[in-house]
Amino acid sequence: MNVVINGKDASLPHGQTVAEYLASRGLDPQAVIIERNETIVPRDQWAGLALSEGDRLEIVSFVGGG
View 1: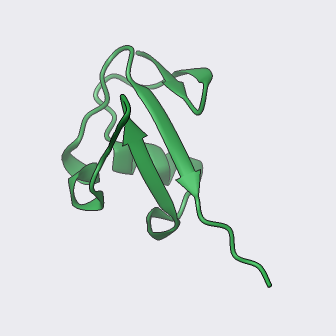
View 2 (view 1 turned 120 degrees about the vertical axis):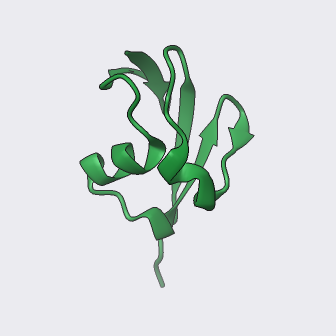
View 3 (view 1 turned 180 degrees about the horizontal axis):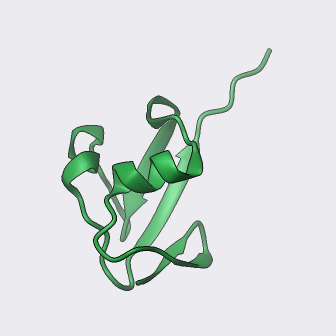
């Protein structure tokens, strides 16, 4: 299925969840915020939220420094 992630087209397996996508990219779920179709998705919903054709995701990572 085709989705847009951070403004770039991406092809993902049909029915992949937000949590599965993050794991496949090696992203720490405690260090990101997910917005799906302009709505922030609560972290406790990621495991059960299957992505759909045409979804638009924004993944924002926290960056530490000092």
